[in-house]
Length: 257
Length: 257
Image 1: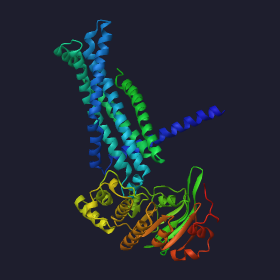
Image 2: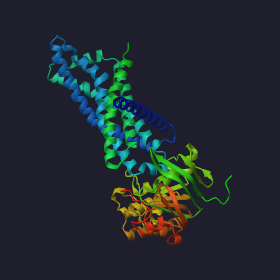
Image 3: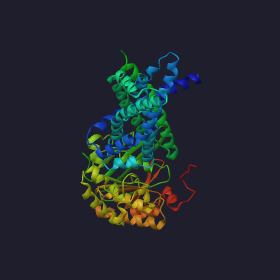
Image 4: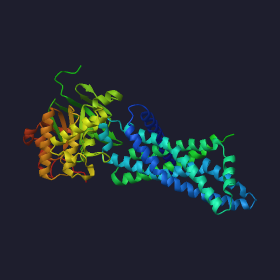
């Protein structure tokens, strides 16, 4: 009976948490989109979330593209399908690896930073101070972060796509003996606009998840330094899992032909 | 219709619980316009929760809180914003915004709440800093560069900058040496007198309570056990008050270890 009670409590607390996150997401999105807007905050967050993530996302994409080219070449030689390297690298990067790898890397950088910053603001009463200074914390803190992540993630992923494909090109032409022009032609002939746009749609959703999880866990942290640490861990873990789950759901939705 | 003689701030039978913990068990207290009430009590007696209920940061389950005759429990949206604009708050650890310079902290309510242009708000901030004994050279520092006493002064300057009609002080002298504590007490008395504001201060520092308060209320286990003029506290004939102000271990107050 105790075992059943434990399962029941777990399920109830899980649904309660889903409800809390949903209400937080609604409030964050609605209040972030309605005036007054904090453009200075939005601009700062675009720089922090987008511009400052460029190096880590770019490096990840480059090495992923290179490794993908090597793997497909090695696998392809078994079936005399080495010529597929350029097209599969382009498809793999734009549809899956670009958005997912960028999403996970930005999660590590940004969701953690947002949760730590807002968590510290919560435990040092800075969020309460905002309220007493006639400033809605959702509008001032949550709205700009969610909006900035939704705007910048597709741009980051578009850049990651280019760098990832270039990584495959660099490995393909220097180590695997492909001809420069043939590699580029195979890539451009094979890739379709929908391959890229589907990745960018995923990126916007991932951006929303990253900022939402960072803000939610930071906003609700309690108990001093330990609470802030826990909020940071929870933000990274929950954002990573949600990104992978959302990736599967979006893939089945976008490529359901 | 409330009687004209009703105090500026009135709390009637206010109850607040956290789970099974019943923190406020029917708080009744009032503060006249332009007067200073100090609420004293030990740790965990409900002082901070009382303050947060008046500020709208926590919502009581039962009771009434009226400011200028207007019920504030249940206020939302523009009405709540309008009420919050009448309040100022000095937090225990100042709760300065780490990401903003000192003058931007002081001017925060003016810029965000009242949409004052930054250049004008900076001039007001420097004037308010001068009122709390800080020079203009402090204006561009970051809060992390300030000592504890300076942070308290900046917190006070931030609270008085929008010239609110009601100011709350949360443990204004905690963590300060007795001399700096007295300096802060004098600054509070001076700035409050200059504004003609109604104030509520929570503290367990009796020197501070005697200096700041026109009236003193003692809270114990979520109820006001004594309330009267500050200069009558030594003749209260209340066992709880006597034990607290003399700092005796023996008496009706149970220490929770």
